[in-house]
Image 1 (cartoon, rainbow over the protein chains, first blue to last red):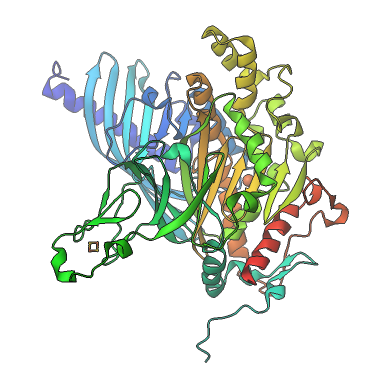
Image 2 (image 1 turned 90 degrees about the vertical axis):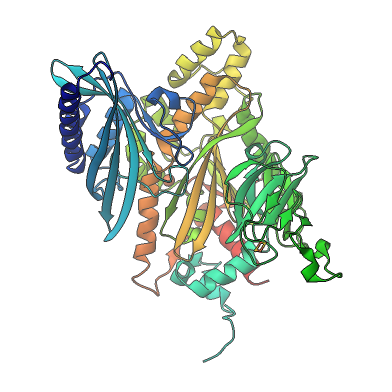
Length: 171
Length: 424
Ligand code: FES
Ligand SMILES: [Fe+2]
C-alpha cells in the first residue's frame, strides 16, 4: 500500500467497489453461474464461526475449525447446483434478499493481489417474515487481464457463534 | 372463569396411544408448553454438556435445562457441578461468557462471589444482613448431575432414578456410538446453532424419521458420489430398523454395516476416504490403525434418540431446547478424535459442514419442513397428526417393539413417555 500514490489508491477503491457491487447484484438476483465465474478457482469461500469481534483471518486460517461453510471450487459448484436443481425445499423458492455492501477498505496490495475488508447487510424475506443479517467480509481479489477475480472470500456474520437461522442463499 | 391451571386431564385426547394419533394442540397450546417444562424438563434427566466442552479444573460452559439457564463447571478436584445462572441476591446472571476458565463467579450487580461449587463465598458489606445471615443457605441453586460416557445430564428432581437406570439399554448403543473415536477419546470440535419456529416435539420426532430422508434430502444425496449415495439410500435398501428402547428413547439403524465400527475392519476403504487413508499412511500410521480411523471417520450408522432433548447421529449430537411453544433452538455438535490425526478431524469438520447447520446441504431443508409443520397446524385444528406408520408389522425387538426402518416406532416411544410424564 505504501508504494501506491493517492491517485492509484483511489482508482483501485473505485474499481473494487464497482466489482463488489456487481457481485452483490448477482447474489441478490441469485444469478449464480456468473458468480461462479467471478472466482479464479484457487481459493476458498468461508463463513467462519468466531468469537464476537475477533479479527478476520485469511480463508485458509479456518481449515482446522468448524465453519458454516468452507467451500473450495468443487463445493461452491455443488452448492450452486443444489440451489439450481429445484429439489431443495428451502431454496426452491429461496428467501428473497436485498443487500448492501459498503465500508470498503483496501488493506493492502501485494503484486496482483488486493486485500479488501467490507461490510454487508442482508435482509431476507420468506413466508412474510423478514430476517436481518450483518457481516464483516474479507476478500483477496486478483487483478487479471480479464479484470478482477475473487481468490478468497471470508464472510463472518454478527453472532456467528450464536443462535442463527437457516440460510437459503449466499452472502 | 376458572383460576385453576389447566390440568390436561384428557391426555388420551392429546395422544391416542392405540391409534398413534397426536392432537394438533400438542404443537400449539402455550399452557401445555408450560406444563411440559414443569412435568418433563424439570423432572427428568436433561442433557447439558459433553465433558470435553469443559475439560479442565475451573473450566465452565453455559447450558440450559428446559427454559432455565445453567452453568456447568469443574471444581478444583475436577468434579462436575451444575447450577442455575442466577444470583441469590436479586437474580442477575453471574456469568455471560459462553465457555471458559475461572476460579469463581462474581455477580456484576452488587458483587456477591460464588465458588466453583456454587457456594456463596463472600459479599460486600455483609453487616447489613445481621449476624444470623447464613451463607450456606445462599449458594447458587444446584442441580443433580451425572454422566455416562462423557455425556453430562442434570435434573432438578432429587427423587429421580439414577441416570444409568434411566438410560437402560441406551447405554450399549452409546458405547457403540463412541467407537467413532477410532481408538481416541471423542471430543467436541464445534457446533452449529439455529432456531426454527416450531414446537420442540416436531424436532424430537425428526431424528427418528427415516421416511423423510430421500425426499427432504434429495439435494444432499445428489451432491454425493455414487458409492456414498448408496450408503445414504437406507430407505431403498431397507436393511435397517427402528427400535423402542424404553423411557421414550429409541434407536434407528440406517446402515447396519456401520453399527459396530470395530468390525469389518478389512472391508475395502470407500472411495471418499481413500485420500485420507493415503495421508495417514504418509504420516506413518500403521495399516491397522489407518483402517480403524478411516472406518470411524464417517461416524456411526444409526441415530440414537434420547427423550427429551438429545440425540446421537453419524458423528454429531443434536440437542434441542424449547424456547416457546412455537420456537425451538437446535444445536448440531460436531465430534472429533481427541489427539487423533489432524487430517481425520479436518475430514469430520468438512463432513459436518456439508450436511449440518444454517448453511448445510441438509439442515436448511429440515428447518423448512419443520416450519411448514408449524404453519400447517394453523388449519384443520381437529385433524390428528399421524404417527402410526409401521404399526402393521411391528414386532418384538431385543429391548422393545421394533419396526421397519421408516416406521414411526421411535415417535410412538417418545409420545408414550411424554404421556407417562405428563400424567404423573
Ligand atoms: S443481584 Fe447479584 S449481587 Fe445483587
Ligand atoms: Fe432431515
